[in-house]
Length: 563
Image (cartoon, rainbow, N blue to C red; front, side):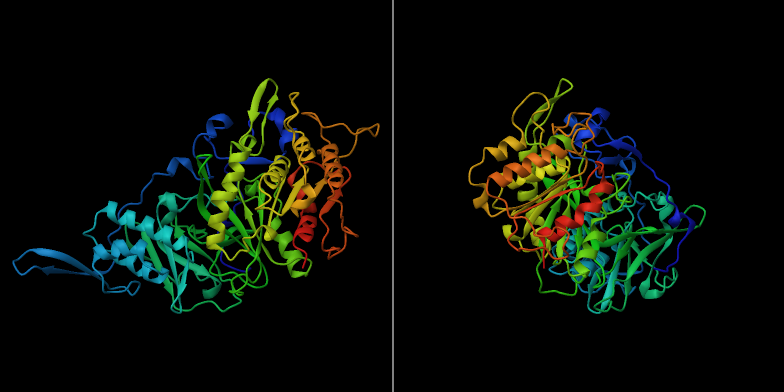
């Protein structure tokens, strides 16, 4: 996509250092070569992290920074008296064309979070933030409620009434790290100097044609007096200045719709019909785990155009590795599941579906395991029940409220790799009422037995009666292979065989339980028979990493979402 860029916008410098999600290097070989990038200074004690809110990739050193108060908005302040010389109300009327008249400032600050639609909320927050008589505490509270209300409905930017309304809040909490590929757009007050403008497809990326107005208290707004056509995506970025007056391009931190390209994160006004796009939910708190994290989503081509359609959903673990290496906390390679899904959907090999990508955190080993195990003398893991509850009771209801999903079990799938495959099968075993489709890639099914125990996922599936009566479908795959002598023994802590033998054993257990209808031709563009309930794929010698899982992901898509 041709658009204006700056040298800083093109910079691909990495700001974070690479560490495995589990800090003990010994475990990387079996529990995932799934790595994460942790910002400098982030503690990596999994046990300690389990009891507190987790890092979400934001720059911790600037979380509490506040922008200086900006009172440069053009306002008309009129004081109404009570007839005895006392002022009892202040009426602030917008003089800049970006807000509506009519409500008192007190009402405006309340309406910013309570208005029933996003356009009314926008008008209210402009009046509220522009009222110099209101305290910073009141206005910033109104901004927080406004952002929360809009994000819970149509999202930013706000489309309505024939216009697009852009909003930027110059504070660190609303401008979090969202593009690991470049440090040039990371938040600092020096990099967000005025004038701040909007450049995008709708104005030929002219960085001077649409200026944002400083309303007050760090709030900037701009209105483009045309809505995008039905099929347009309208990519855009904000443009500010740094201390040397050099232009700084940065994606809209509040934008719901976005994508990563060669210049990093780019925001979209609306989704298009020729490709899917990414979206995010700022934070979903885990009731039982007592932590929170952002949630990222892939939305299929045509989602914004097909307003009456509903879509199946795939829940994916290690969501920070799902889409692009520019994601915060990404591994060195990503699954690129958005590109794979677009290819399958647009070619007619899969029905359109939504992906909910749940990022891992420093407690990954605890959250992705169904029981504890002893590794090198340390007892680890065992919070899998609470993590599954997080997906079922916290994440899924939020997604079902905000998106046009098919919420039934028949339309809900779950998948992951390594420990992510283990927890997917645990979720399928524990909650068949929620997940009818279960997938595991290179799954660590022997967890629970490394330290001499017997409570493995293989044992649990083998001991469960009536598996075939649950009407579930299972996808399994691995790379690696048997030992050099052809024997199949389970992987050890430093065995690179990609959980090959464990995957074969899970296949054997499922087949013995009556789950034995395989696709006739696993490489067919459209799989048959439609009632196939198990798919197993072996990629000889494939390693245990994101690149290998990316190359096999399409198989699970075709199996779960056959047209």
